[in-house]
Image 1 (cartoon, helix red, strand yellow):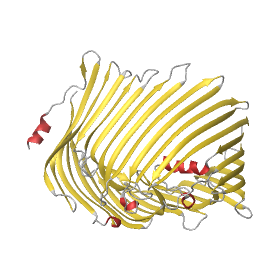
Image 2: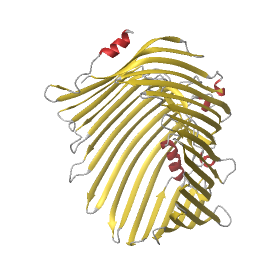
Image 3: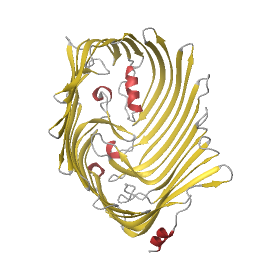
Image 4: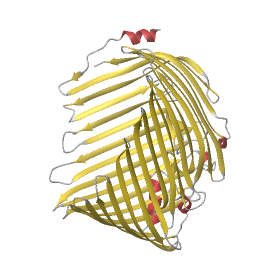
Length: 600
């Protein structure tokens, strides 16, 4: 009761305060008090009066373009049934400042620190696994944009997270830092640019994805790039770029490193209004290293399985496009590639063309793309035909909003000669007014496979919803399966998995469904509830796991002036059979009052 009287009794103050001659500040805050209880199978149950809040201090010195800053501390702001939408009580601070933003030398700095906060560990096509832990991040940037001199920009980013998966008892970490420097300059009609990037990361992963062993991955990457461009006659342009990079990867007692040099050039011309032509070339002295580097950049980890091999790639491409009418656009291209990897050499030539067509049709809008190519390469006897088809249509039919789209791919070339991918995808939607309500439904899916049995990814989804002035409800169902790689923030899709990293693949599959409800029956009163559940299975090496995730939330909020009265309930269950532990179950309830203050 005393806390409630305190929240009610503070009056509103002026909107801004000036300290001295040049410092201006404003301060807003949210104060909360309530009663909460927590219980679960892996925590000590507790209940009692709780306090929490957040604040926002902002201001400037001399002028906002000289120095401006914001500081946002918070405490006890992470109940799932409060406004923060998280499982645990979290506290922390975020702060940022900019300096000289109105000058040729702008700079910025930001920092955030969190304790006992919730996070995610991603799974493609599914609701993410939930984590809890501590983290911090620092970001510093500076630039120089002086007329007549090169434009420069610098940035430094550093962060660290300690976390655990609910339902799995191992400790995991993620740390990273990166430095970037870039320059641009115009001289004698050339636009010249250069850059330097240095980054490193270290991760220790949940043991259920690493054959129940504590596995740490360290990776680093440094690169230097230089490029130049110039205008050409006939509204054309020329570009040339060079990049040198060096990367290392250390995972599961296996170290892999490589240097990559890449040179590329292109020229485009626009001789007449409807015609474009172009040429491009690309060379790299480490083809597989470039693919490995893409995996590391995306946050994945690898175990090197091609010791002592060299790989190169040369790619030459010519194209021409012509716009016949407003509705018809054509493209023709000729591509030649020569590659060496895994101790063998390969070459391939692709001749192809496409036509794009769109128009208003039968009261709606229709668009399509059709592409065909003839592929000849040294890895197969005879030629293969590649096809790509995409179709979209939408229109209103007797009050119904109808949309549909589909795509089909056959024998599309991948980054490596001899490996192609095929697949299809579709999606559709319906919408209609039902009295005072609007109903909608959607369906979609996709499948993609390599020309090797057993490797592919597929997903499907269904959704429907009904919404009106006072209430809304929606439901979803998803199903997904495929192969992935272990990454710092979860499982990530794998490029050419069986070719590059057969020992590192994690196979997954499963389905998920959920329903949500929201209502505003009277002014200022908001009611929400949701239920979601997912079942997934993962296979990492010889370790398989059956995983489950379930959540229930319900929340009520009533606002009156600067007061808000909140009540809620949550239940969360997450478990992994490979952990050997029972699923982690957490439940909590809360009711309390909060008030927003504008101090100055």
